[in-house]
Image (cartoon, rainbow, N blue to C red):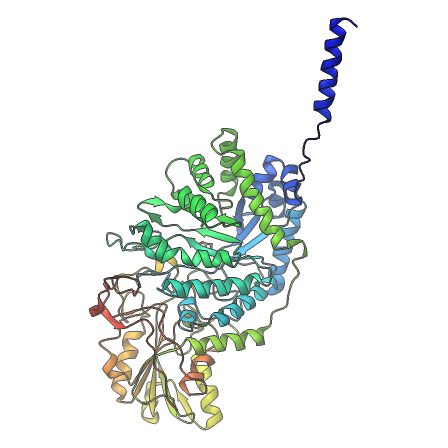
Length: 596
Ligand code: GLC
């Protein structure tokens, strides 16, 4: 055989040996297979979240949009369980009809029950639930909230807020369980456990430092909201990170980024905190969602805003209005190599992971359990009441003749506060048809026991006692930022001033209830009041308040925040090493009981 043939034979033999050397077979998981099967457009569509009002079934189908949200107060017409089910199932059908054939995630802020659904039973806001210190209760509320949402086809709750709020002047103080990190960790994790046990996706928000911004008195609104954190990294880690660690231990499936900044770096552009800390160091496996159009606050063009936030680690872009422009910018960012395909694949794999975890294909509905929710909410209300003063007048006698005065007496809008039927809340009870007001709750007890309830000052002489019900106007987010913590200040209800005077003029013993989302200044009034109760924004079930006032249940609530004595009270938090105790009215943990 000539040399050529020999070489040829050697080459052929070598080739056959190499080619038949079995490459280790790469076995893809089903999710990896799904990812590998998706086109770029299908992947990018999954990363977009529009608002209900700016899309329709066809747009979802054509873009393979991965999720839709209802912002505060956004609801279908009719605003009924069936109206919601029709909406969510139609939009989901549109998603499944898309080429990616993936189910839709529908997100909403159910922050104290299904607060966009007219007639739903609403629980106390987080500041009240913090006063219960009851993780088991929070787990049950999370579960009940999930059932309410599931009944309307909603799979994603932008809750709980894990802010560890340090400044009482922030408009989102009532969305926080406490100024104490450990209490926020335990209650937040419990709520997540309850909510996700029913197959809903919870959201730990807002990452990170939302409750630690510096008061900016150069502004007359949004003085704190979406502001700047100037604490050291060590302080930030100590104060604000543990609730996210606890949430991840509960396998929280989503995290929402904060509007705020750290040292003037917007969180939505912080690769360090979102990717290096949250995803890599803490091992978060779920999806990171941006806040409402928050990426538009980043510097530069839309293209650079999209690239910066996605490269920082944002997986889903909450774009209620500009979703089509953002989708186009995202595609251009990939095509121009501003965002690597590896980042897109990581984001989409996370989206596939949470959709698989939620078992959306079998996302059954549920039916509202109003009776069960009312009982649970009433229990939560009673446990959240904090008795701050009692000169022996409580518990009330059930046959007492009582004069109720003040803006909160018969107003379900004021007892619910913000994020209730509408984003900023309601000034009347019109849209809470199933709520029980304090007037109804007092009347129920008095009528059954031979007592009388009056609401007109002319009947003052007939009353043994006055119950003074003061309130704040409803507010949400930066709209609720204030430099004035007085009971007759800008965000206090305008009826407070007269009611306080009227109560004084009756010369009767006075029990004061505060329907407020934060601790307001009471020092100048305390000696005029025989009893004082922080009733908070307690939701729709006022009998929980009368249960403790009449002694059917004990007062057990204790403050989860320091109560300030002055407005400039940003240095009173119990988490600060050098807190100014001269500005403290009641310390965290304070709450009286009534011995039998
Ligand atoms: C709001 C809030 C956030 C909420 C989101 C969707 O701006 O910051 O808490 O989840 O938008 O409503």
